[in-house]
Image 1 (cartoon, helix red, strand yellow):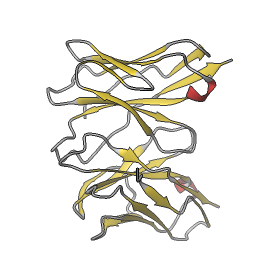
Image 2 (cartoon, rainbow over the protein chains, first blue to last red; image 1 turned 90 degrees about the vertical axis):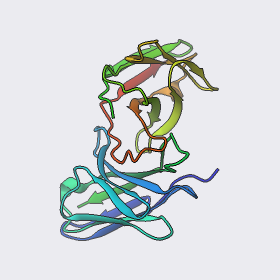
Image 3 (cartoon, each protein chain N blue to C red; image 1 turned 30 degrees about the vertical axis):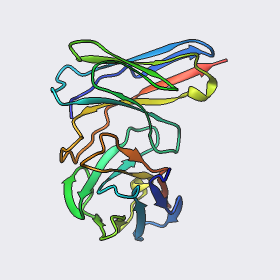
Image 4 (cartoon, rainbow over the protein chains, first blue to last red; image 1 turned 90 degrees about the horizontal axis):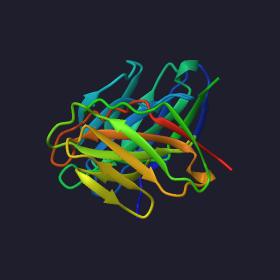
Length: 113
Length: 113
């Protein structure tokens, strides 16, 4: 079965640079969630989208932005990167009308040096 | 979503049965209980979901008492590969606009030979 696809899997950026992470939800899933997980920490909710509209925001820095496109894939844009942004970023998806389960991608590792 | 409380860590040995309990005193009528497993550097993986009584699948069982204020994930005959962090999430998702899925502090399970 198709899963949530994230790219790239690994990314190394320098401070003050910009990074873009992509998430391709499971086909027919209309809701996407983004999370940030630092080393040894629990996942922190960043932002979510339903039908291409932002649904909710969590602890997402102002330097970060995200959107969901017409094909339901989502992109997380991170600017003015800081060392503290180094983390595993993963997204999850579900289908609102039939999905009582959220499925997670394998994550994208961002290292800021 | 309802707030959840789990033990921070647990240790066990190969071949043993492991039970991890999650407390969710303010669970709502329409809330489901879902357990996820997360290995280092990977996204959380769905294990099992239930609403009441007992649910069993090929990897685990989920016991939910009548008052639904707690739930117990049971892993039969664990192996070294079951060493992971286990998260309990409680909330209503089906048909809902639940857009902020919050992780609590998971249980770090360590299995020894």
